[in-house]
Length: 218
Image (cartoon, rainbow, N blue to C red; front, side, top):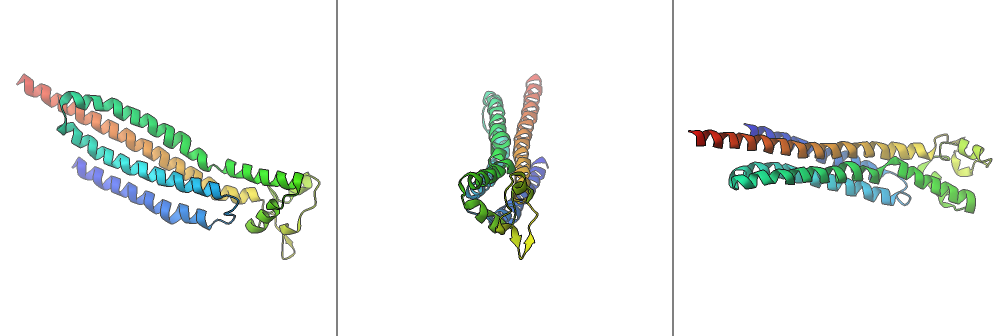
């Protein structure tokens, strides 16, 4: 009964992750304009989601492996498997919860925007103007950015004679912020599966030793 419930629940979890990653997250990122400007960010998004999916799949296999090892190895070896699971939880936390979400934060994307803006402001680098034309945005937070620096609003901020009021930071935020929090959710899910594996194995181990003790008493 327990095995069947675990099997169906893990299949549903894996299916949801694949659907979210392949049908929502990655298509939205690939469809996002400005591939030249945020190529490294897009690569990080793909790397993070592929890695998280792989980790979760491995943890599903680990649950079945833990249950199988309970009855296939010697009694004293089954106890030594617990520290290995604890170390696995620690590594999952460091890799998935701490490291992965930082690779696709909206703050990093905004820092790139600021760098392009400063290069244009100080060295007249045309990349910032090209980026605004491609993303159809104006300034960092809107045309007010140029007014704050006492600069004239460039022609790329106009679409058919109408001033574009949305800043580039808003477009980048909408694109990467949701992906960032979704990666956090999957990271905590990976850690939760690791914890479930540990608790399930611990429960089976206790039940096994209770059975052995009762049999030895008889």
